[in-house]
Image 1 (cartoon, rainbow over the protein chains, first blue to last red):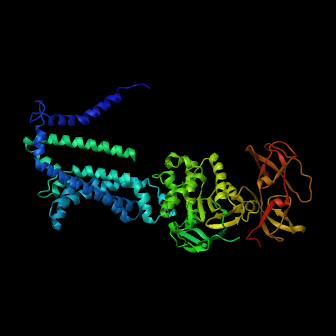
Image 2: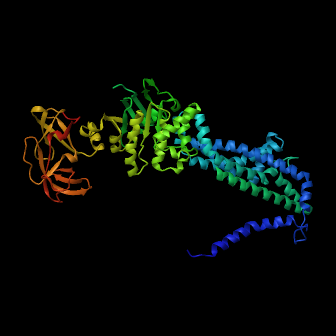
Image 3: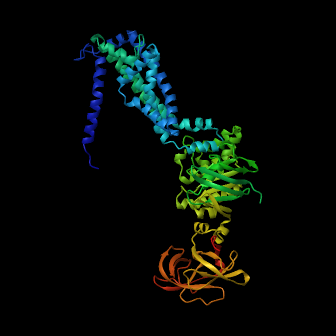
Amino acid sequence: MKRSWIPSLITLGVVLFLFAPLVVLVANSFNASRFGGEWEGFTLNWYEKLWAAGEVWESLWITLKIAVSASLAAMVLGTLAAYALHRFRSWLQNVHHTLITLPLVMPDILMGISLLALFVLTGIETGLLTIWIAHVTFCLSFVTMVVLGRLQDFDFTLIDAARDLGATRAMAVKKVLLPLLLPGVLAGGLLAFTLSIDDYVITFFVSGPGTTTLPLRVASMMRTSRSLPMINALSTLLIASTFVLAVLSSRLQRRA
Amino acid sequence: MDDFLVIDHVTKTFGAQRAVDDVSLAVSPGEAFSLLGPSGCGKTTLLRMIAGFERPDRGRILVAGQDITELPPEQRPVNTVFQNYALFPHLNVWENVAFGLRMGRRPREEIRSGVDRMLELVRLAEHARKRPAQLSGGQRQRVAIARALVNRPQVLLLDEPLAALDLKLRQHMLMELNTIHEQVGTTFIYVTHDQGEAMSLSNRIAVMNAGKVEQIDSPEHLYETPRSSFVATFIGDANFFTGKAVEMQHEGYVRVMIEGLGSPLVLSNGVVSSNQMLRLMVRPEKISLTLKRPLSGERVNAFPGVVEDSSYFGSHTRYRIRAGEHLITAQLQRSRFSGGEISPAHGTSVWMSFHPDEGRIVRLEDAA
């Protein structure tokens, strides 16, 4: 086969385009210069400052709490919704389907405003609960879509087979349907988790005092140049942990 | 013959369509029985009702005297081999076979020995740890059979068991299924659209058409004495003629005038009386071809025709022969010239003949 340098060139371009900003960011987190314009020597100073910034860790904790609980709830509700959408057909299901897909296409800012309007109207005080509700709302759509895709490939004669072999309806779901859907549910949950963890726009509208999530905290830190290098350090830590998670999950998938 | 599986006046409609229309039949213990018919004839719906996936609108289904009509599938003494096997892809072969026993909460030791014995029977012991995706089509089929039989069902249902296999494997599995049936002695119910499959697998066949049973009989009887033209054409090929009984003869024979055919024919009779309209069915392989008029023994039906075309099939040759208004299909086992039989070319004038006992006559319903 004839070798061409074009694919390599394109690959290189893509890698540069995607990762150059990250390289700059990681480098600057170790740069003694406050503004990162030029290299002024290696330092761990920003990490020390970050370590001491209690409010950042508090925000991270809030974010994780919301991301974990919201994606778990979205996994349960999304799987149920996908099952209902797949198994039953009626005009009401068409409405259901539209409602589920709406958050995928609706601008975040619209969703944020409308959710806020709802909470104000119903008198629910903004805070952890309202953020959680908002996150479940948009995560639900993503989980449903992923699980729905998985269901479309599912052979329902397997359920017949299970019942034929003596499984009750519930046992057939537990022993056959759920294990086969699980990869889809987990993939949807992972997607929901990553969406929840870095959501800014919607969270901005529905958060309250004392519930500053990490994206909100970072945005507010951006306003003062003093804490810019701290954001670099924080981002580097996030990149590192994301990398570890990605490696772990691919190992898990290979074993399954 | 004591009845073991009984279908008692079962009807099932989907919307306006009667998928199964007042079907009754009875299967003996240990029998290999086939439901045969074209797609849409209701055989699969009937199978699904026996398995418990559909509920009949009317009628009852009994197994060994027990009415199972209202039981959910998991409580029926019936197991199914599905058309595409429906093996659980997330479980290995051993776990697939163990599924039913585990659902039945059998003791661990019984499950182990039961599954091992069953894998031995279908010769898959060395593949026990493989996933279904790693098996060939024939192996998957055997897993499906083992998975069903391990539960010691009173009746085993097999839905188009050979349809997903290629020709070579199909012939092999055909023999394998017969062997397994002999070894376990369970009542087997096959559903198939393939007459060859049904004939070689079963003791008796129910031929179904448009939701109704046309005839229940042994393969030999279905082929030799079909009760309707549907059965005659579905089981093998047949030439059909319409005619009228003109004269009753001694020893149960009858003279028949066939429309569009000059000479009268003599046939063995059981159903018609003088002046009744009838249909005559003659199998292609019952017709002999000769160049000259056969020496007329008293009871040989002979009439002339012209060969229109022939197709060579290796083991036999088929001819299409024009005789008056009829285009008759004849099939010769030997394509070599022998014993007065010929291998005629296109346009040759030939004589067709068959013995009076080898045509079958059916009374036409609308005859006077």
